[in-house]
Amino acid sequence: MAETFADVIDAIFAKLAVRYGAEWLRKWEGVDIAAVKADWGYELGGFGWDLEPLRYALRNLPEKCPNVQEFRAIARRMPPPEFKQLPAPKADQEKVAAEIAKQIGLKAALAPKGDMKDWARAIVKRAEAGEKIRPYTLKSARQALGMEGKMSWQ
Image (cartoon, rainbow, N blue to C red; front, side):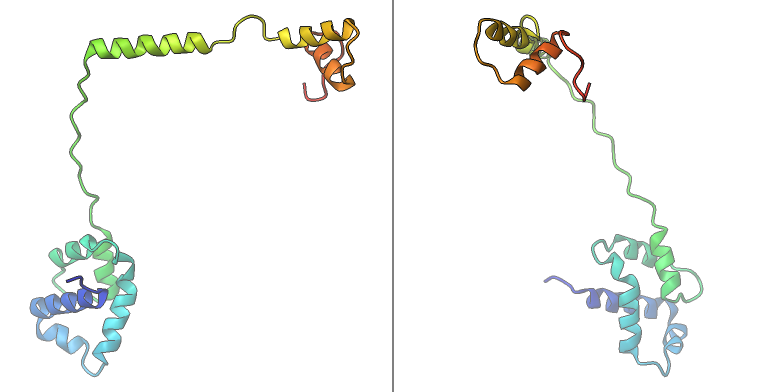
């Protein structure tokens, strides 16, 4: 059965009543306990997704009966969890070498072949052969080959 945050506040109040007894009960004498619990629920609502800080606060109560701000401050002082470091992965060196060789081969296969300006030379050659080429395309090709001034973005 899933508990609500109101159940969490009830459990906190029960623990504090056991720990501090009459001091806890006198603290709320003459005050509507439902309003007090609602206030504690509001102030501690940020812990609703992770109740561990509230458990920490209950394990580390001060000698004097805390109010909600003091209780929240104790919860916020919870140290971060410690995680064990995983062991270093072990790899088969032959498999690693084979994968590296594949990657090197793939890199070589994807590397550009020939001159990167062959496209520009082909366009200029087509224009010189009398083919009709759009002016901007021809200008771009000539600029790429250093035959005209630089483009505005260069």
